[in-house]
View 1 (tube, one colour):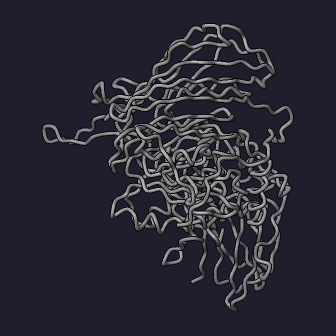
View 2 (cartoon, helix red, strand yellow):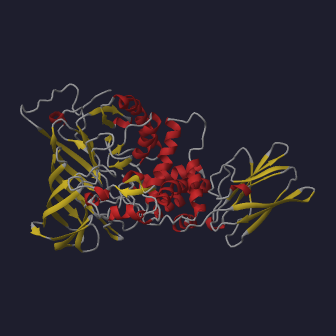
View 3 (cartoon, one colour):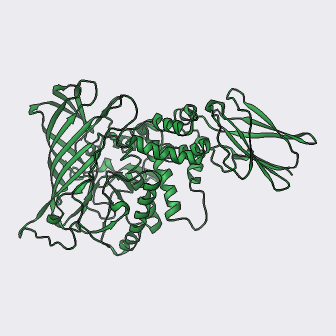
Length: 624
């Protein structure tokens, strides 16, 4: 594996708040943290200084911090949720039999004092003055010593001590695969304040929202541990561990027991890291000279797949660069750790004891989050479908290219099947549901991942594939390094295509209205004309693509515009005759049109199956 001087600098360009929405603003934060980790006790202490810029027009009298580690304590909100939800996350519960019946027990509920997670705060000051603090579960509430006026800066300082919990969800120690430290959601993290106000949500194992800023972090840890994570290592030749140039000798102090790793991460909204004393560290130069780092356990059954996965990661990076936009940082790390796969700034933590296909697949998904969440930083708690769904769309597209299945498949078929299952189950809730407040985990998972993915695939059906591809690229270009909302992706699609799409965003995300069209009758009304009768059974309107095949082998494409769009899609089949019919207004449940032929073999609504019709059995007519 090619080694090279690890980049201690960062890209020589500045990012602006280039969100095109008039009056848009976002807060800014600069973190400095100095942390010391005790790898025997799994405890750490730290000092934090934050320079906070209030770019809003509001005067702030309070601020809030996330204390995520506090969730891993018996009786926490996360623990309570595990015990009350019908289908708790399997990774977070223990299953056993009692009196012949299967029982489930929250893993958090049985944690001992030396196994829990905690984050204790002390000595909180604002510009040197003591501020009043109050801890409520996983949130620190701070009443400021002095209000922060609009367009003003202030400095917060605090001391913190934490304990890394046993690995249960995302962060923790001693994972099932033996990784010592998965340090995610580990530090006091300032909550976001935006045009909607504060987002001081408790941590119940779902999604995140953070303030854009710069992180300057020093981590002192046992010298045998290798760290990978967010940011650029500033002292590679003092550290070694695969970060230094292969031609440089690293000289440690003779009796050193620890090393201090110094990272700098510009323009991110989170900082995560993983560490282990058995990590193998490989570096591959990827597209655009991006340093791809791979840190994984030195286990015989692990190494082969991790080596094979590395060039595929470079291919994935190239695909995302081409189909979304250029990755804006100079490094990305894939780190073994955590409990599945989770995205963070400039890195991911994934479980590593997987088949080759699974390893590439999870890397594809988590890496894609670098575009859809860590550059396009939606509020995941409120719009989780934009994060998980868009990521699923582009990562599935990428996997179909870099690791195509042995048998040709429709890349998005599973997403459609999952969504239709949920829509028919009676358990669906609107995509506007807060990520923590779905009745069942199954409903959250299918909604966020599958229904969110279908949103984009189906958008391609509505406005055309070429317009969809242009929409994704412009969305990235216009909204990178900001906090886009659902209306933003809708408006980009409208500007690219010229179609009105408010109806689509509304029905698909704010309701559980379903799509259900049918062919109800096909009849010859004379020797040269066939009448086709259609019905809209579902509440959600759509434009209709209809393909007619004749007995002589020829075909004709008919397009029925949705009048709410005030727009017509170009014929997606230029080699086939296309006819644009009169638009179908939503208020009318039925519609009919004539075909100037009678030798009809078949008629099919949505021949490419890109419309999420919940009952496709009545979408086709075959003449017998």
